[in-house]
Length: 114
Ligand code: 5GP
Ligand code: ZN
Image (cartoon, rainbow, N blue to C red):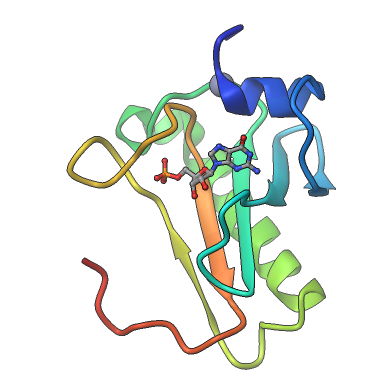
């Protein structure tokens, strides 16, 4: 997808602070962090939304969780706790149309989600 911001980040065409990368996913710091640790974990493949995930990509979602756990440890927030969030669609608050998992932590997050 040539007009997708996150595909451009993967391709290195838009600068970002990449903290992890493998053949399936890339993780980078959110440009407008909502917490001391705010990382986005995205698939290398351009998938628009969580809504598009079927059984075929179940392994990819599992891998994203494993990477989030690994990053939480690396960022020193695993012990105290953290949150992973997928926003899906307009009402879900999804702005960027490339699937992403937010990893948030480093402060006590509100117990409420919306
Ligand atoms: P959404 O609301 O779609 O779930 O979240 C999109 C996230 O992407 C937001 O937290 C926003 O700050 C982040 N974001 C948008 N554009 C860029 C960018 O160009 N670089 C980085 N690093 N993050 C971005
Ligand atoms: Zn994309």
